[in-house]
Image 1 (cartoon, rainbow, N blue to C red):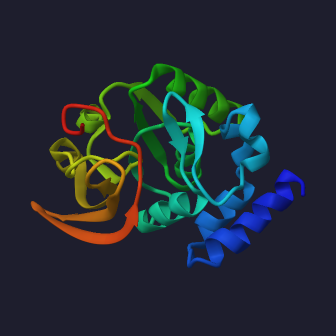
Image 2 (cartoon, helix red, strand yellow):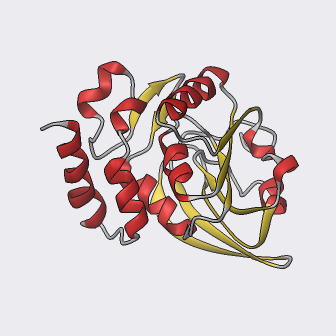
Length: 211
């Protein structure tokens, strides 16, 4: 199958089949060339139903997990979004196509630079990049209507809670190394409601409020 056919297959068998309903998420992931975000040696597996290595002990998440976490943010297109863990840039690109602005933080400079280059080639120009400790967020541009964390911490980092806008949503994996729970946090004033959702496994969030 061509990559275009594989994308359609991914949407049908991995996303819709497992309960992703947000039409905007499905449309974006059905059009975005995931093969651009994986190493050349992994491109034949770009639409594999699982995570793939991208170097530096990091991974590109399973397509369903990307779709599920994005859907949980309930983006309407007007939001300012903070992403922690740019990684391959694939999740960043999905957010860039769905939100007004994306601010993404990555601790590994080479990954940040590579992602920025790919997104520029795809003409996704509403993303801002920062290399640093993701557990601290990016306070200069807070508050954010949505925050998505693509690496796991023992608990939700306090700076990210502080940077979440009133009424905002955060989706993050929380728990020990190797096995976590996906959590959605909704802020109402100074109250943070946490919903524990599903079992996941992410690379660790390295930083002051992570590992």
